[in-house]
Length: 179
Image 1 (cartoon, rainbow, N blue to C red):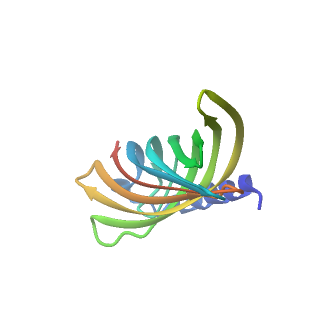
Image 2 (cartoon, rainbow, N blue to C red; image 1 turned 60 degrees about the vertical axis):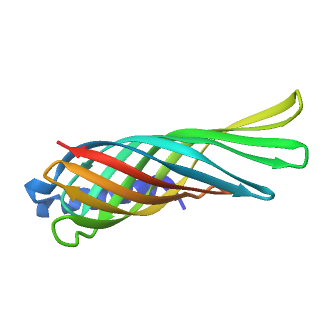
């Protein structure tokens, strides 16, 4: 599947829905979040703290687009006498489809694209070997947003990045301010 076409479809769907926008639920927002990133592959299983900075635009109570930076941390694991560490960070863009349940709670689905840099280091004693790569993969997730007043939002979120040779997911809590 072409990731650019998927992102374009999300953006076009959001733009098409602006005719039904309510002024009080639309606008720009900025936020930050913290959580845990987990990665597993053949024989490797590691986790570390993660953080993100993001911004976006809510077209209405149902659709938004956002982008930002995410630091995936450094997941480590020991395999015999070898220490394996994988460090990653990148930028993302995503569309959010929300389903408000009353005035204060909105579960949502998230689909987008993340472009990231990743460095894997294998070390034993004083000897280490590193390999870096840059790639782009599909990002999808689910979340629950809590509206606290006119401007402040809290989020609980689960995301998965569709990495071809590993499972990579993030569980996070975030806060956002809507202008």
